[in-house]
Amino acid sequence: MDHSGKRLPDDLDDARPFRLGPRLVLILSAATGSTALLAFSVFLFTGPWQILVLYKDTSAVLAFDLCLSMAFFAQHSGMIRNAFKAWFARFAPAHYHGAVFSIASAICLFCVVHLWQASEHMLVTVNAPWRHGLQALFLAALVGIIWSSLSLHSFDSFGLRAIRYHLRGKSQPVASFSERGPYRWVRHPQYFCVLVMIWSCPDLTADRLLFNVLWSTWIAAGALLEERDLLVTLGDQYRDYQARVPMLIPFPGKAGSK
Image (cartoon, rainbow, N blue to C red; front, top):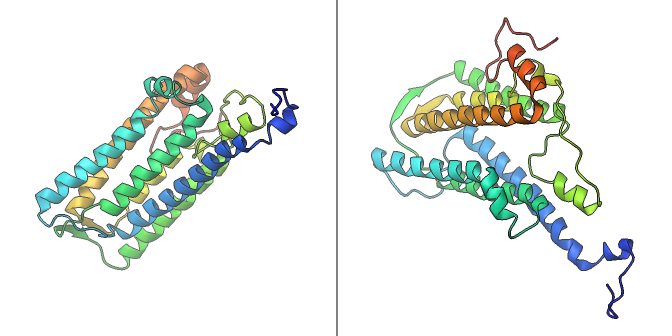
């Protein structure tokens, strides 16, 4: 509306300064989400950065790292539940949820990367040429994540799509399912690639073993919960996909092609 109280045309109304709000959320979500994922990838490849050393005793290190991981799991898993979405809708429009979730997850992931405590207790270390082989495997898995994201055209890692459609005054299209790229061989190729990245570290310290076990268990549990939701959303189409394609680990004997 203008100062006289009259309604402005839609195109003028959309250009008012308040439109800057969702655009800032878009930028913040994309910036924090992408940099957090980059930092996490480097963390997995290089090991703990030890920016802030809080503990030296192995027991204290492991206890702190356990709490740090559980805090991230609680935030990440809690904010995608329907109960949280209903609570969030009381304070902000629903189309902001994905971006706010991405920003909160990025902050928590930054905390994991920067606060993770390293143990001096080395369990296993691998020397060249096997070390180089594991590093190459890590990079191949990273490429696999990018390939998976590009193959799934509807993938929206930072919760940007809902806000973009809102800004355009359009409704989001109904989610659809199709088998493309690595999804022909494994139902959750991104989770599989992250597991490869987690376990391809050539230096296995006590804290890294704790990290690997905790995060692998959480990824597997998350995949199972996601499967339950997909069955509700896609029904028999996804049930047929489950029967043909492995969930996390691709293996011979199950083909993705119909």
